[in-house]
Image 1 (cartoon, one colour):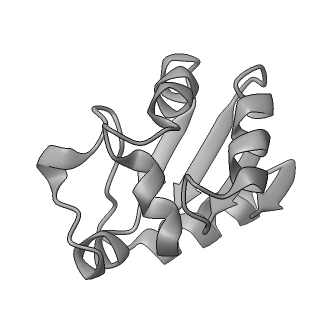
Image 2: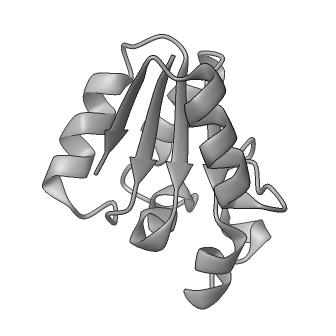
Amino acid sequence: MTIVILTKPSSNQAATTLLKILEHAEKVWLYACGDGVYSIINASPLSNTIRIIIRKEGFVYASREDMEARGITIDLIIEGVRIPKDFYDQLVTDIMERADRIICI
């Protein structure tokens, strides 16, 4: 499984290109933190890509703390995005136990 740590906003060209490529991958788990949480907003340019990842049995997680720091509320995010109680604990556990490949952008 591929784990992607997204720290760049949806306006970042490298992040956009990477996520478009990952639309075709199987079992992608995306972790949005920092400015990456802007990508999980319903109106984000990457919202369709995020939905595709979720539909293809992938998971999308977001950092509650980073969402709150940027004024992003639950009602603004894409359905199916998960907000774990301890985002970084979940991330480290998944990296150690499940990841075949890790991509950070």
